[in-house]
Amino acid sequence: MKILFELLNCTSVSGDEEQIAALILKHIQERKDNWKVVPKVYSGENHHDCILLKFGDPRTAVFAHMDTIGFMARYANELIPIGGPEEIEGTKLVGSDSLGEIECALRVDENSLYHDFPRRIERGTPLSFKQNIRLTEEFIEAAYLDNRLGLYNALKLCETLENGWVVFTTYEEHGGGSMPFLLKFIQETAPIKQALISDITWVTSGVRHHEGVVISIRDKFIPRRKFLQKVVRLAELSDIPFQLEVEASGGSDGREIQFSPYAIDWCFIGAPEDRVHTPDEKVSLIDLEAMIQLYQYLLPRL
Image 1 (cartoon, rainbow, N blue to C red):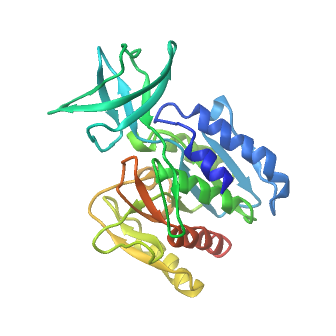
Image 2 (image 1 turned 90 degrees about the horizontal axis):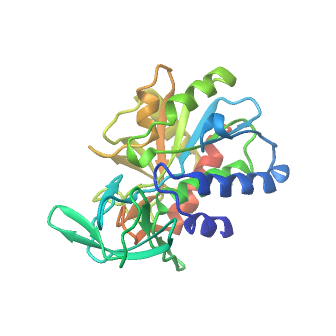
Image 3 (image 1 turned 90 degrees about the vertical axis):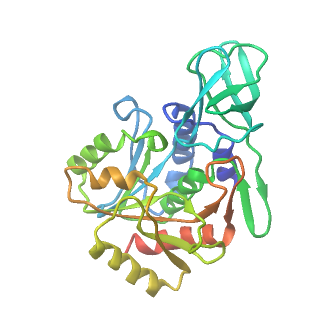
């Protein structure tokens, strides 16, 4: 799990994904010659900080977002959220500006957010949760399991994938924005008709730890039932533990697929976590393993 720990210790608040993209690209370049199929790698300024890997003759694409929630320094000692972080008094935040490294605490005053750093932080500086990784026999707990585990799953998939796209996206936590040009590039290069979203969902009254990876029937958006039924039937044949999720809110890169001009089916498949968007997100290792296994089972069969 070395690469997972490296991903967890790398910051990438939405809009500032350069560092995590460089880490993932380094991992790809070091490992790709030992994968079952060596992919064609697309990256660089034409793709901003996104990375696309084309394996063989793709039918399906897997998308995993690289960005995280966080905060941005405003004026004086004010902060404003990026994405939807939980605003918990005293939460430790880290970052850096041209004057040096920053570690401070979040201060919550009614509807306003502040930091307690002893000097003014430069305007526009992104801050993220201070990392604290805890690994036991049953769980992993850390900041930003959403979506570091989705990235880890996508990289594990690369080891065995023969045909497909694996795509690392940006901006997802703060409104999206990279998917339109990525989908256009995919459809002009090696078009696909279906996609899976490698992301992390919630533990709820109907979704629990240790009961398997989650196949989402719906969140705020509803993918095409015909495709969902195909995915569920294959999951049933796999004997890999999974749970079905039905929610009224939430979203992912799947939203932008559904809103795109392309007829691409999509399905969100990911491990469930507790304490969402806090520094203490918690995921069952059983569910994470089921996620990895199910992606490796589904991709050759879809």
